Amino acid sequence: MDGALILVQLLNGIQLGVLLFLVAAGLTLVFGIMDFVNLAHGALYMIGAFFCAWLTLNLDSFVVAILISLPGVFIVGYVVELLVIRHLYHRNHLDQVLATFGLILVFDTIVHLVWGPAGLTFTLPDAVNGRINLFGITEFPVYRLLIIAAGLLVALGLYLVIGRTRIGMLVRAGASNRVMVGALGVDINKLFRYVFATGAMLAGFGGMIIAPITEARIGMGSDILLIAFVVIIIGGIGSIRGAFIASLIVGLIDTMGRSFLDDLMKLVINETAAETAAPAISAMLVYILMAAILYFRPQGLFPPKVR
Amino acid sequence: MNLKSLSPAGPNGWVMVITLVALVLVPPYTVLANEPFFLDLVMRAVILSIAAVSLNLVLGYGGMISFGHAAYLGIGAYCVGIPGYYGIYDGVFQLLLVVAVCGVFALVTGLVCLRTRGVYFIMITLAFAQMVFYAMVSLDEYGGDDGLVIYERSRFPLGGAIGDSITLYYVCLAVLVATLLLVHRIVNSRFGLVIRGTAGNDARLQSLGLPTFRYRLICYVIAGIMCGIAGWLLGNFTLFISPEMMNWIRSGELIFMVVLGGAGSLFGPVLGTGAFITLEEFLSGFTVYWQLYFGIFLVLVVLFGRGGLHGFIEWLFRRRS
Image 1 (cartoon, each protein chain N blue to C red):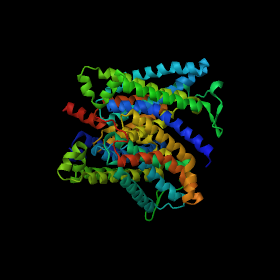
Image 2 (image 1 turned 60 degrees about the horizontal axis):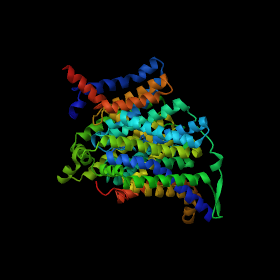
Image 3 (image 1 turned 180 degrees about the horizontal axis):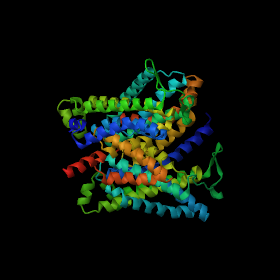
Image 4 (image 1 turned 45 degrees about the vertical axis):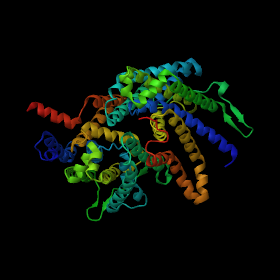
């Protein structure tokens, strides 16, 4: 365990956390305001990745691809809300889980139909494809630092929009009492449609920026969705601040656990037992964290103040 | 209502009797028509029916939306696979193991899960199932991601091994009937009344002085063990296990089977499973992109299908009379 490795893994953990935040932000808003469980949120992350990969391959410009994909995913989110989601608000959670589970199948198959089963890969533009020296200790990919910066910017932007603007005020009001907001003459359904589409776009953005590293593939949405749910439950459903802090906690714990847990366990138990158990435990770590938090603090770490 | 559903008085009672008789006649048919594949298909449906019926006990009657029920299927199957890895094929030992492991797992996770409500319950049951999933993925000793081949079916001290498929089929069917009887007994007992009551208004039952947490916990454990036995049958049937069996997608499919058939009805989950397997088989033979139609169907069922197949049958007959 040397300092360089710890620094690199620390940054990797933050990068994962930032990515989780992009997915969790929309999820927690939708959950918080409309009490709606959206399993299909991960599918929008996947759609974003495929849009962006496909456009990059065709237009030969990653930046242009992102600029076109963003409104693209927004429109997809808007249409899905219009066609399916809005009919489910007054239903119970079981119906919401099932219907959005069905949507996952639909999205996965559509992507399979359009782009084939293999997934799409593309390379980064040369300008960001290098490594950068960190304090003379180690090197780190420039692009991963860019992901962290982009995620932090989005977080800051969301914080300002929700905390400082009129729309943000309505969103916060909707989260604490949507009936009251509706009674005051705000078209809560329209507001929510835009919140949903924006959440979709944020998740899509997450997919876009990770696509050059991991490739765009079917099923990538479900993988991140489950961890995003862990994040919003740890952070407190409906709280953007909670989602942000929990994203970083989960990202760091997951990354650090996977790289250092076996070394730590070797200090306590014998080497072979540690090598067998460490991968299993590190994969379970975030779920263990969630179970523990739900046990001691069922409402999450930072629940919205008024419910 | 539930007493009636067991005697062939209501339309759904008749559907159950007819379906069960048809299931008894499946093996002779497959032998005569020489269609062994059809037997495999029905056997899979019967095994998954047991899992769906057990899920229905917590989900349909108890209102506990468990999104991690496939974990018990997987644990049950690994209770065949892991002893088999060490050359132990004793069915009694395996079944005791299923009861012990599933019982303890349900008890420990239930103690945590049942403290929560609503979405939190859905998510925490999912989280526990994912833990088991990742644990088995990471255990390279037992095949990890690739799974484990089971070389022999379970042996019993008196009856010998469950050798051929037809014997196994009748074992599965017998377990299904036993599970249905047990669930029927449970939901119509005083215990079941409390369980169904907690789904409606838990606080009210608590104020009547009932320790509802204990009731729900016991119900959760019973359902887990039942599903574990379904998993034991599944392991014997497929002779192969992998963590894929307890993927969260499988849990979602189990919920769909219950809802499609009619949550909170005795035989509904069996009908739902049958419809699910039939549809999957039909669509996948017809197009590679069958999941698209399947997904759309799922959304439509949720939006427009109230009460599932069970409700549909009742509606059909009530309209006629």
